[in-house]
Image (cartoon, rainbow, N blue to C red; front, side, top):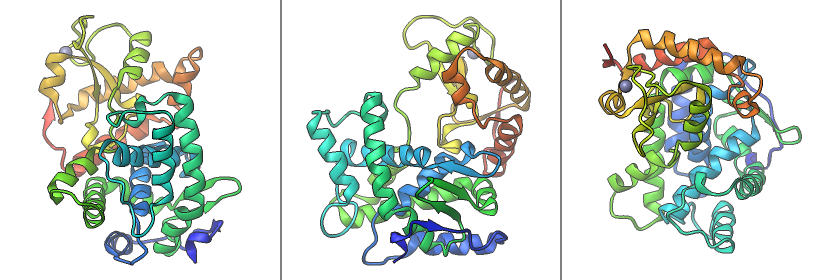
Length: 328
Ligand SMILES: [Zn+2]
């Protein structure tokens, strides 16, 4: 039984895109009786951490468990979709429901609103579940070709070919994963329609507040709009934190991709990619954050950032259809 595996080596380093597509399609659409939504949540966690890999394509179990827990908290608590497999409740549902009841957390609380200690406790419990049921299972489903892992040292390494593929086809992979996840949740829960669910599944990884990032940016930079340079009003709701490369593409909140913006620029930019000229500006802006030595929080948020990463991300977003460029 592959889900019982404690360690898995990478079976094939050189995969063609065709092979990767084939494996993805099989994994996403397979309808085994024992299936749960686990594999979709792990793929969503991988997508959210694509830009967090180090130069050896490694991620930590904690990074993956954090994203995985957030996905389930929002599905189970916020959207009340408790059926995540057939038969008795999935372990992750029990862990989350128990925590919600014990701490009497209202169901409109998204994961990032929980206090830090509770988040850490939940992530740690769910990491244990992932070791028992998740890492080995997706490893087996992908024939050991997508990643290597080892529970003891919590080692996780993506196949570089798969990493490259996921960047290149990110939008398609995200849409396919959301679609198949919604189909499975629909078959397990009584819900109005697949479109109702797609909206929920698309946004489950999204953070509800970017306030912590706003504070960091206000601490480190002048209070002016990154795009037009005008002073930012301190009135409530007038200063926006903008995903430089749109969230709908990156699907995650990275400090190095967030800028302060005035309301006018933020509304007008919306879901579009800024002109190349701004890319140079955000790269110099990020240098300031990288060079900072006093703020440990910032140093940790900038770990694994490179100029090349944001430039690649910019090019990949164009390849993925974000070709309407915004700005003067
Ligand atoms: Zn502006």
